[in-house]
Amino acid sequence: MTVIYRIVSAADWQAAQAAGAFTGTGHDLRDGFIHFSTASQAAETAAKHYAGKTDLLLLYVRDSDLTSPLKWEKSRNDDLFPHLYGPLPVSAVSRVEA
Image (cartoon, rainbow, N blue to C red):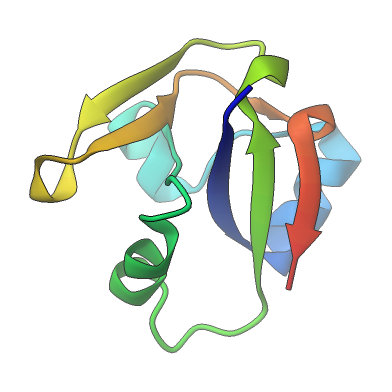
């Protein structure tokens, strides 16, 4: 099992909990997958995409509990990033950090 990470707004997480799954933001929907980061990539992702935003949460996700395909694809700096091609079940989230 590998843990991957997703930064979300508290409102998006609350909606996901009510629905049972997170289906992504507009950015995710446009790209066709939900963006995730590794532990070593999460800080740079936060700085690049969420600078100045408040009310954010960090989701710890167990890849073994995902029900949709997870692909590791090149992105920023040619690093491999985890991309989920389907919804993120709330049950796959092992921890939520403010």
